[in-house]
Image 1 (cartoon, rainbow, N blue to C red):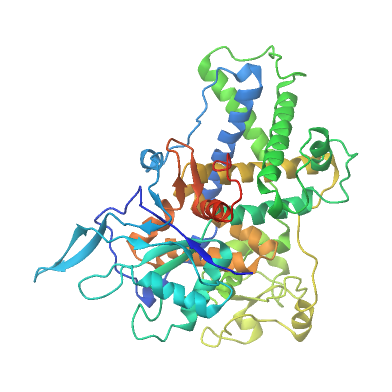
Image 2 (image 1 turned 90 degrees about the vertical axis):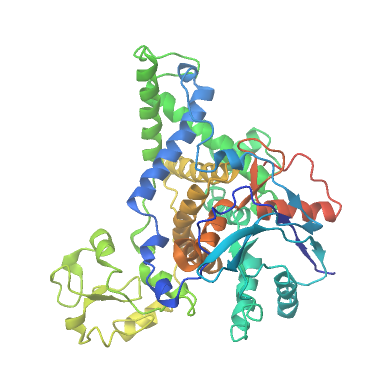
Length: 525
């Protein structure tokens, strides 16, 4: 079997504004990036709730007669909505970047002016991405097309790919980090994991919980039962072989659960029934629909297990040593301590000290001695804080090496199962909608939320890749690259709003076309 690399290029529909700098941040600036930027903030959670409410309202307005005249946002707008509705110029055999910014020295200051790049061959390349040497050779070829400024410095560009490809490129760059130039170090391209393969991974996690053997075909309301009842027979346990069919089944079942719950809230027995207390004015009716939708969304929120929270030091262990120091910082824990631990049970002293008193976390999640320990109580100072992981005792260190059960949602009865279905379904629908709209702000926010699931479900590769990308968006690369990472993630093959697909999905379609398989009617799934 011969392995090859298939590459394509797109012309940006949302090019970086000229005022954005191409200057790379310093190591000090990268180290100053707060790890709080990598996890969902309270505002992120509010926006996610609002986004989920829109998705629920779309379902209700489509299937419940009382809400058929309620206006609902079909396309969530963002700063580049109009540009994202344009058809993407895609080139699989040639790449032509029509506009870039070259730096010219006028003697007083550096000016940016547009210039055209030549066409260069792309498409299928005879490199085996399973071989590190071939990956390096492929990157060297790509670097011959990376633009440079007048000083010969590469103007980095984003290289999107699936998680495995991005991981291999990062590994190749690590292996060449002692090169004499940016080209020798292969850092003219910045690899970034894409969204379609991530969606496949996350849907498989949901399937492992909601589509298990213990949830049989005779249990009414389960995914397995509804798969058979409504002839979704192409769906199997392995999502990677039936992703689109599995997603459609989850969307179908989620819609059914949402409509059923709305009917229960409204006190009706049929979607066509009009409740007696239905508001008459359009504004009151719209508010009523929003209130019902919000109640459904709030019901779907599942609290993570206490020992499943992603802590700042867990992120630090997965960061590249060349990107950020893994030393424990003072700002890590105060907020999480308040949420996750009882102060009376902390430390050896079992007493609450001043909130500003620094503490160190025992890396054994099941620590029984206190989990968090005051520096004074364990005899260390800020100058002697251990780097990396730390255990309060040999018993904790030994306990941490034992195989722990994977933390996952426990299905306990019909109510919990319904919550699990609606929660998983709304998240999957929101991820898909954000990609279809090319909404970079929402896509990045979803990556923050998904980082928690990567941690809980033990996906270290995607935890590392997600951390790397979020660091880049937070300031670890130039302003110009941050813009590209957010707003150049998709391809629109036909034009129009809501018709974008992620670039890794489009590349899969190109792979299928190259292998001679049919790609009819799958571009917008």
